[in-house]
Length: 305
Ligand SMILES: C[S@@+](CC[C@H](N)C(=O)[O-])C[C@H]1O[C@@H](n2cnc3c(N)ncnc32)[C@H](O)[C@@H]1O
Image (tube, rainbow, N blue to C red; front, side):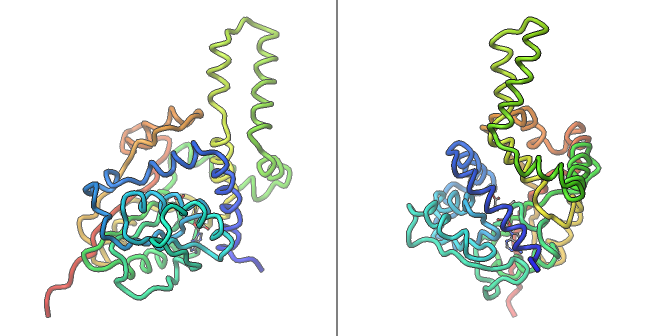
């Protein structure tokens, strides 16, 4: 029987490979992981040993952290299939990275190993997110930092819809076929069909049509598949307070919620970018509830014996 982690890995392997076909998508992801986002100095990573847990086939955060000067990055994900591609992506940093097959819920590292632990978009995909968090905390060295990005609790209108569509995807084979078969070519065909039908009935302008076309691209197709295909067992289940509690119980200090403005989205989601950044605004709360919870904390140093 395929395990949850193997099934999740297979979905993301496909999505990450498609993302790599488009330089703009990869560059957008890389730009999200920067020292300023973590609130640290530009040269902060220079002498740091870093873990990127659940790095994905495109290893975008590992790439960004190496680009930011990390001394060494361990990039970990499930199985080994992703490694050939990740090694090509990270080729410029030869000698400064290690690729590791592993499970975030049982990390193959000794305690207190890393100066900085990064885990984005992974914990809501595992059997026991809290166990994954405990493992990430265990391998962070005292005085080191742990960054976690996890989807927050529902309640937001958009997330409520996403959950409905996720259920439909699991239960309705014909809907599943449509989602699985969705491609940017298919999407663009529908867009052209809509425009042609509309043109036949009322006056339109080339500018208006060009704008409408710009709302749909490959990145959007991959986002839709990301939200619907992953066999996540925790559908937007966590609150910020709960995740802060995990940090607190394990002795982390200075826990802060981070936010960033995701520049460079080409499709319709570019108009939502201000809400991803201002996650606390009433409109963002209405649409996304707790949003994508991005927390960073410092593991406390035990007092001298
Ligand atoms: C949404 S992707 C995020 C990838 C990358 N961190 C990023 O931000 O682009 C989720 C990743 O978590 C990985 N993953 C899922 N379950 C895992 C587990 N138990 N241990 C380690 N990685 C896991 C998947 O294989 C996938 O690459």
